[in-house]
Image (tube, rainbow, N blue to C red; front, top):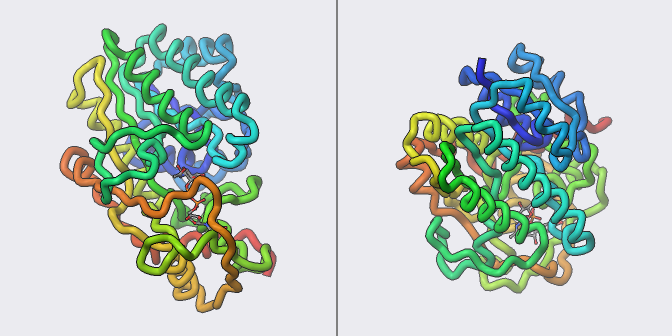
Amino acid sequence: MSSILVTGGCGFIGSHTIVDLIQQGYHCISVDNYLKSDPTVLDQIHEITGVKVRNYAEDLTDETALDAIFKSNDIEGIVHFAALKAVGESVEKPLLYYKNNIGGMLSLMQAAVKHKVKHLLFSSSCTVYGDSKELPVTENAPIQKASSPYGYSKQVCERIIEDVIIGQEMNAAHLRYFNPAGAHESLLLGESPINPPLNLIPIITEVGVGKREKLVVFGQDYPTRDGTCIRDYIHVMDLADAHTKALKHLMQGNVKNGKVEVFNLGTGEGTTVLEAIKAYENVSGKKLPVETSERRSGDIPAIFADFKKAKSTLGWNPKRTITDIMDSAWRWEQKRSPH
Ligand code: UD1
């Protein structure tokens, strides 16, 4: 039986995508070194789907270990999530980010070419557009100089894939996510509790359950409708659905061999920080302690997606709103917190 190799399969988006892939009939294996995840995720996937996914606890930069995984499985496609993603940490530790994100990509591509993998989905980010002039941003917007090693690693990985697959019997897609959040409806999966959250929505839910004292809003003087930054929050299960659809698209041969197609994955709805807080307060019925501070360095005022291409090409339509995202994120947080 041929398999789909999910790298970072125990991580946030990886685990939710495995669930969707299994439910759509794919056989998945995972490689995840548990650097930012933990093995209990596999039990949760088992509980939801009834399927035990095999995870190889290896580092992608270990070429020998990777080669052995490809030798012992018939891998038809790869969904590549495994990467570090904390923007601030990447500024402090650029070498770690380049070694992990770019080094991992290189050995993965090497194995993919050697073992004649046919399809590759890459987990990219809207960060490649920088502070886009064009809003909503389309896939044709120019790539701008990255403001962090994390952002640059995404740009470099996109380019590596584009260069390496030329002349190969492989097609690929870059999936550029906007701001992923939320949890699986079973509440068996969500954002990993072992990483201290740095993103707005898990921070909001932590303040909500009292794990943090207050929420600090970074800047209220942006040129937006209420002065706070606008982002496009996308539910992780809508993202998972997009991966399954993009993989099908590649498998059906809709993208020529040697080519890469790019898709924005967002809802098209911009939400300000204050609107996100309001959405939380509405679903939880609780008022959050909020304080305003200076702008956070590197933040852009506004970005949200034009996802028409994913809609028309993949038949993908994100179903969940910011309220649904907050509702699932809040319930996931509550489930893990002592009352
Ligand atoms: C960033 C990256 C994104 C990456 C994501 C994952 C950019 C443009 N985006 O998203 O590619 O996938 O991190 O880590 O590089 N905020 C507060 N208070 C807080 C936390 C956040 O006000 O305590 C605000 C931020 O200023 C921002 C918004 O909330 O305006 C969203 O922040 P965050 O969740 O960290 O995501 P991004 O920075 O948009």
